[in-house]
View (cartoon, rainbow, N blue to C red):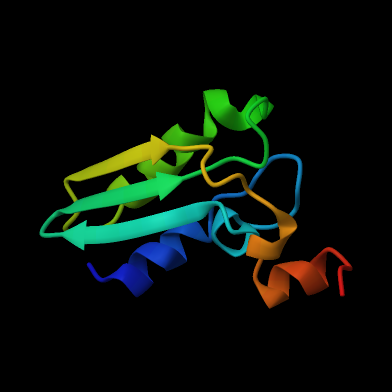
Length: 98
């Protein structure tokens, strides 16, 4: 599986409070595919985000459902802090930001 294919899987996972997928929202800081394993470094919109309890697991499940992937390692960091500047132009347009 390639990085672009993993990105498509990540685009199926949404922050429950914002109607934008986590990839376009800018929550994914690093993504590597090494053989049959995927390594994801992600953040959340705030350190007190209620999705912290389940969003990393949703990411893992979305990736591990892909053919050829045996394990997805998902780590959460809060450095650097997420800001709206990390959002893709599509996400910004969808949310009405200029």
